[in-house]
Length: 282
Ligand SMILES: [Zn+2]
Ligand SMILES: [Zn+2]
Image 1 (cartoon, rainbow, N blue to C red):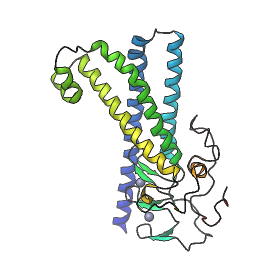
Image 2 (image 1 turned 90 degrees about the vertical axis):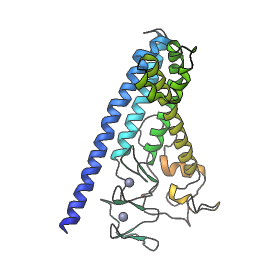
Image 3 (image 1 turned 120 degrees about the vertical axis):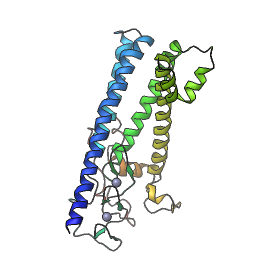
């Protein structure tokens, strides 16, 4: 019993430290990136304090608000079975979780990292340090989408900016693009540093772009990551693209891209999954 309590405490501490670590990284890295783009890169491309400069500043603030906001909402929205009243439901299709030692609703899966069952569990997200499930799926999608947009947006300016510093007349520049980290160590200077940033810019853009397209495709088909293996055309939770979107982004799905603060009520409770009468919850 004592061992079990100790284990739970250790896992909770690990999760707390993980959260703190990612929040600290986000609070440092994202503002540092923004500072670099606005104070160093942007003035070399457009005239400082001009109308164009303020337009870009507005766009950057919008992106920052959505990235940070969706991340914080995604991290702290409870999508687990913890604290939910699971009594009074028809439990015919519920399965037993041997770790939580309780019956769990359909589409809920146990996460070994979070150490609890997650409602409509999609996957465990390292950046959120928690699982993506029924109640925070929207925030995860918009978080990855806006990081991707920010990477594409800043790529244009970064390439223009970096081209000023690069001297193309030596083969070393190719090595710098292929091994950016090594070139910082070997030949530290503005050129190596800026090339490194552009490479990171491209890699993060490709990674988040792939993530977003993969998960968005799943949403349109009404399925979760664990359900992709056995997915068939007549999958019971596929209600058509629009209802599938509402299932994740809520009743005001077309507005959620504006801000994480927009309230968009989800149609269900993450527990019941009526399949005979598909429109019952809508
Ligand atoms: Zn469980
Ligand atoms: Zn998890």
